[in-house]
Image (cartoon, rainbow, N blue to C red; front, side, top):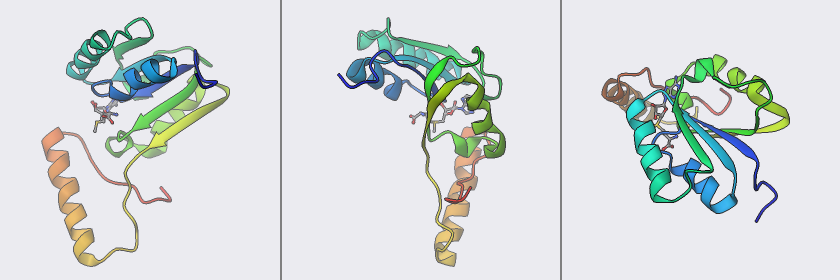
Length: 146
Ligand SMILES: C[S@@+](CC[C@H](N)C(=O)[O-])C[C@H]1O[C@@H](n2cnc3c(N)ncnc32)[C@H](O)[C@@H]1O
């Protein structure tokens, strides 16, 4: 097992819990997954039961803007495909307090390159609009600098 066995990891916007369960199963981390959508949290709990990792993974409904954890709780905080829905200026700052000193932040997010053709830019803008309407949340891709 790698060194991070038994480390405490928070996955923000965990969705159906795929990565949280993977980390618990493959690495042996203790994982907490939070998501604003109750339906996803129920799916995530079911996944954890199916994969027999419930003792290492806890899922709960929570908002990334009001993380319900004490300061310095986690060795790592991870997001995947979440920041597009959020205020990026604010979201990542919310993670720092719940991280231990020298804790890690793992950000696996889509972005759009700045130098693209007008046609590609138009298609991305359209996709952002349609996707935002489907999920009923503001949705935009950041540039690499953002
Ligand atoms: C595209 S999904 C990604 C889910 C998962 N990370 C994955 O990669 O499969 C975005 C997730 O962010 C969650 N989300 C959006 N706003 C949130 C917020 N304010 N706090 C917590 N989760 C949020 C959504 O409910 C959704 O599950």
